[in-house]
Image 1 (cartoon, rainbow, N blue to C red):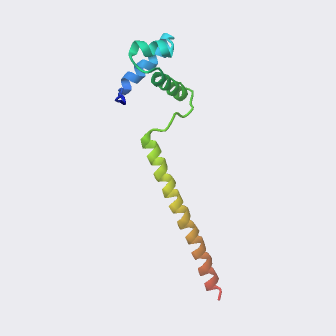
Image 2 (cartoon, helix red, strand yellow):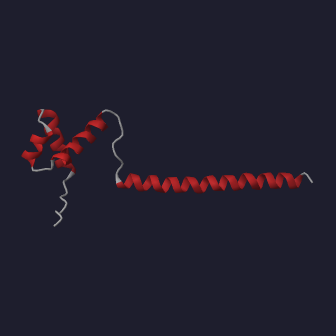
Image 3 (tube, one colour):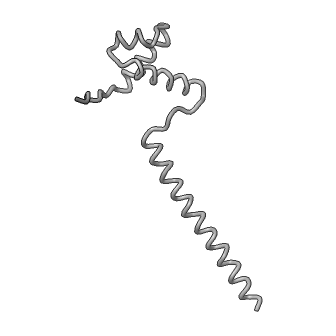
Length: 97
């Protein structure tokens, strides 16, 4: 039987990461004390350290959706530009006759 996925608040995540970083606790020890999966807490800490170092962390679902939408919009605009270029060339050629 599959376990139900637990949701943690942003505040809880931040406090758990601070607990590991500021107290110098190992991720495994902190995870046992907080009742969180070791890999889950490790991911939170890695993400926090990555964002603190200036490296972008993983994209959120909202960012992923926006990225997908913007790429589709970009493709559409590029096609429109190509059509306009061809139309300009056609009409420029027609006006010379």
